[in-house]
Structures are given as structure tokens and as C-alpha cells.
Image (cartoon, rainbow, N blue to C red; front, top):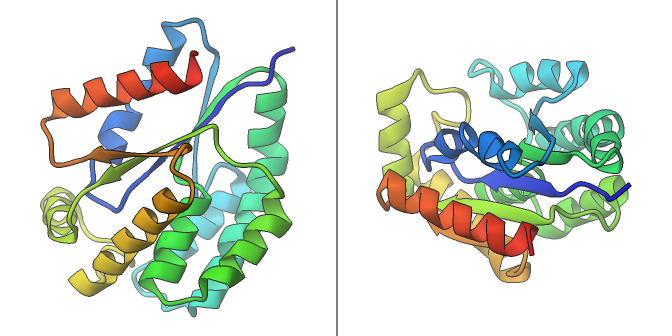
Length: 207
């Protein structure tokens, strides 16, 4: 059986990631693909419990604690959801993955980049998504959109400088892995962004 494709969506809160996550599975199913939709943190019972802890605005966790919790949840997610689905020929579409840990815990919170790289290598080895769609917006745009949409969680309460660093973390990952990480201008119109996403998926995952 042919291994499935692994697609991740990344971006700071308010970049439009969730909007496009809502239609991408249907776009793939229409092309004959069986899709498993999942998310991080989350995706398993353990991951969902850790998600509640990580996003609780009454918690204040050390950056190393956050990273270790994220990779513990990720190991469980890989073992019980992502890898079995890929081996069964399903395409996995995941709302955030390891790029987010580099962006938030290293870029935003200041944890050494190489420490996260060590955890990445330990937990997932050579496994990387086949495609990462990174929705890029200036930090002030993301924060304004988030504040207008919902009550902020623990990360969304951070200031602009934090999200400037998160954005640079994402852009650094894109520079390091330019074939995998495709940057999409999240300030464009919804229809234009959607067309860009469709073109990228078709050109990279269906070639």
C-alpha cells in the first residue's frame, strides 16, 4: 500500500489557518484521498488533556516545561494516530506540528533552538511533513483578528514583541526547509489565499 501524505498547517493565531483547515480535507477527499484530520497539541486523549493545560491562561509554564510537554504529546500522537494513518495510506492533515514548537517555545519564549532540534530528532527521527502551509501575517494583524474573534488563551494574551519573535521563528524554519515549508501571504483576500493553497497542494502532493 502506498504511504499517505502528511500535510501540516502553521501560523500564529489570527493568520487564517483555521479558516483554510475547514475546507482542505474536502478538497482532498474530492480527489480520491482518504483524510485523517488532527491537531497539536491534541489528537489523542493525552494530547487533549495537555492542550487544556498548555492553553489555560491561569497557568505560567517554563519554556522548557512547555517544550517537553509538547514533545511528550507529539510522541503519543505519532505512535497512535499519525504513523498508523500514513501506513494505512491515509493523508494526515494536522493543525500545527513541530514547526510551532520552534516558533513559540524558541522564537517566542527564548528556548535554545538546538534544544528543540534535539527533541525533534529524538521523538520523530527523520520524519517531516511532506508539505507545510505556513500562513504568514504581521503580528499586529494576527492579534487584532484574534481579539475580535474570541476570548484569548494563554498564548494569545502575550504582547506584540512575543508574536514578532514567533513569526521570525516560523520564517527561520521556512528558510531552513524551503521545499517543505511554503509561505502563504495571509493578508491577501480569502479567495486568493484559497487559490494559492490549492495550487501548492496540487503541485507538491499530486505530482
